Image (cartoon, rainbow, N blue to C red):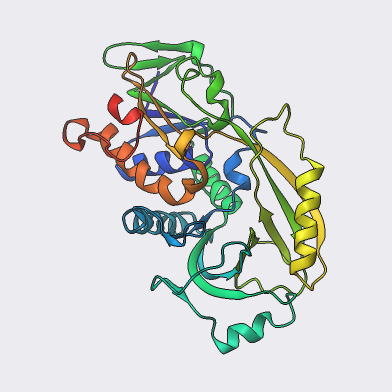
Length: 346
């Protein structure tokens, strides 16, 4: 019989963060992750941004969760030896219909002379508004580095998790020859097939991104003009996206959004743009972008950590700390008041 404190099902960003936090708290974990699964976490833009560009206002609670996120990713970088986080300016171009009014926040700044020179000749005439300091997470590098670290510690099982094998007892859960205190499901879009959580109000959508080769475009910036261009860890390759498709029958990338995006880029960039890949993935989201975090009301040792949405890389570390604290010291942690509807469960 192998005994661990917690089983974590899934190693997208949610599974990565909660397994990290539990290990940091001195608890033992075993992570199940099925090979060949394309996590939506891997195709996310993953920009930690303190500002809501749609409303031109600071993101709610950003002063609370961003320091937590930066602390987590910097320590993961140190722990794994893999570069996963980098601060860089995001350049904001005029959105057209709703241009930014007067500068409203000390987080927004004008470009310096040297920065203007660096991007000179890259764009067709369009109003460049301001710059905003953000942090870029290299999603693939982060998830791969943590996966390798888990494997090195012999706490990663690369196989499907079969919920039908769970046996619940008052003081423990048995899964085959493994005994644990609790199971935390971090399955992403697969949650709709989970026998414990399939009834939760997930609103799945298909997200698409383009990978583009753009020689000559400086990689020292992130660019935002209706859509976003983010440098990747591959030479001259930029992430471009993303979109939301709420009604879909498959995960095949569509022509309509791709062609519209390439047309927009042609009107924005003076540089050559070559499409290298078009990727689609299924996202688990909820109405109002509310994360699903908590224990099943009838199965107190069965938890879910899912539905982190577009702010997953920003908000996820803070929520993982809260959930870990509850799991490790439930008598002192108190309720998780920042999320609903599942906060009432714990």
